[in-house]
Length: 197
Ligand SMILES: NC(=O)c1ccc[n+]([C@@H]2O[C@H](COP(=O)([O-])OP(=O)(O)OC[C@H]3O[C@@H](n4cnc5c(N)ncnc54)[C@H](OP(=O)(O)O)[C@@H]3O)[C@@H](O)[C@H]2O)c1
Image (cartoon, rainbow, N blue to C red; front, side, top):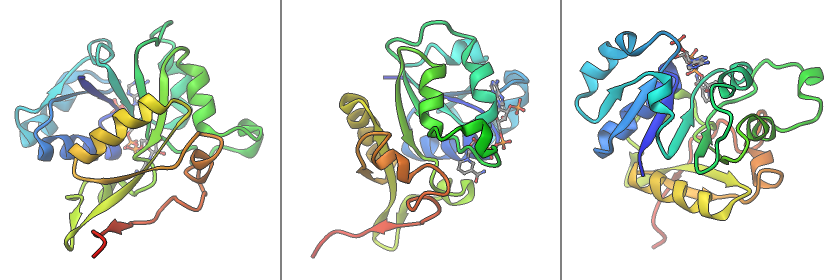
């Protein structure tokens, strides 16, 4: 498996910190090109590589850390997303109910990346909290993971564990994923799981 983050803003940078802490290689891209990501990469070290969007899209697992409203246009860079896992870390923040038309944000993302396995995860925490060490007070920070595809859920659960989290699978997008759609009840909770004694 190799990994890429699309977006080098608050969430993209938070994810890059997590990969660095775990020692897992990842590439990161934005609209302005790799040169603009060098300052971030230089502070993080060799695990994070600044890339073009085109090169980043060679990865098996692609984190979307871009504004929700940019997803449809971004996704057109590739006609066929088969074989990719797209981790949707976006939130449809500030998007009008008329535009959403009763749809969940991840359903819109899934339609934009035909053939990909979409996993909703890493969207429920503010970027500043997400960036922190997931180990806290003897426990591990919780991230929720939702997908219509069990294999993709399992893959991202495993990655989240490698990154130091305590992932909780919450089922399909129209079930548990609905709870992760802002302002759903699983959003904006900094939960830390401790081992049962
Ligand atoms: N901020 C939070 O606390 C938080 C928490 C959870 C989820 N989220 C969600 O995470 C997503 C990112 O939020 P953010 O706060 O990180 O935003 P941000 O700081 O504004 O960063 C957005 C990034 O997306 C990049 N981008 C935009 N369109 C792109 C495209 N077509 N191709 C490649 N890169 C593109 C931008 O590139 P440039 O740098 O070149 O402009 C920028 O690096 C949003 O959907 C947001 O709702 C945010």
